[in-house]
Image 1: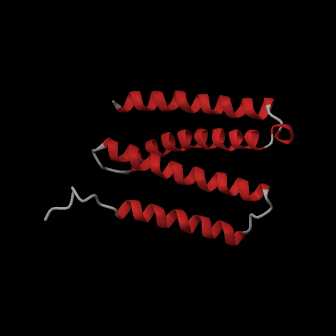
Image 2: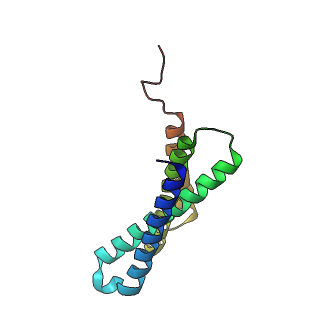
Length: 130
């Protein structure tokens, strides 16, 4: 898959997720629909954020890095978009439960930073030469 096709498909999918997100806001009442309405709200918002942050991250990474292999940039920007989206979604959920305090935000960012460091330092066994 070429980069242009990836960006077009990711943009279309992100647009669809934003449409679903706004449809959920417009048509669903969280007091009537309960758990499913709230789950669809958070899920559609997360997918829309992943798509947006992935595309923006890819463009920023493409501007500021000299790496010639574009698939590495795509993988890294997609993975980091998932982390940032999860931080935003968990923060929103904590806010809705009145549990969002400075200490929880620091812990959340620290946990995802450690997870990202693990993925950055992880090397598969097939790439290690003996």
